[in-house]
Length: 174
Image (tube, rainbow, N blue to C red):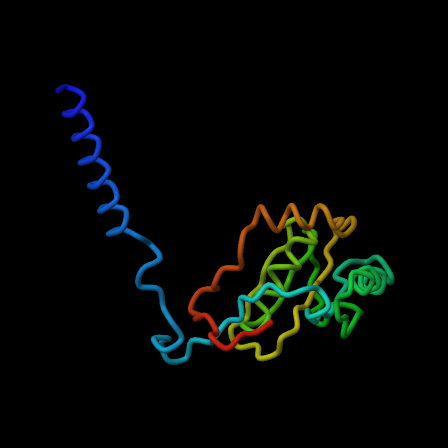
């Protein structure tokens, strides 16, 4: 008889726990593109293969030809390198790297973070309309991560997140 009472209490506790978990589910009520507030850009969160990611590589250090060398490393890893040179914003960067991108390149920037073991600083510009990520190399840069390190880093950082004041692009395709 005691066993039936204990099992009954456990079942009741499980039902209450499940009801509370479903009621407080943080994934309910997410913003869809149809509900997107006016003026919010649609962000492409698609994680692409490197050969589908367009990048510009810029040097923000005093080391000559660093952008060219890093651009070659990215080309060897199948990225579409469009430009390489000195940082057009002429900013000095003490960290490893800065990734500058807009809504159409959120997934690409997420992949690139893994090549810097998630130590690159993200600079999201909601007004930017292209699908290119600017990779700006800083003074602390040593080398790009290996394939194994990239895969590990992608596992650690999870999936790409929506930047503030953006909505997911339902038309984003691989």
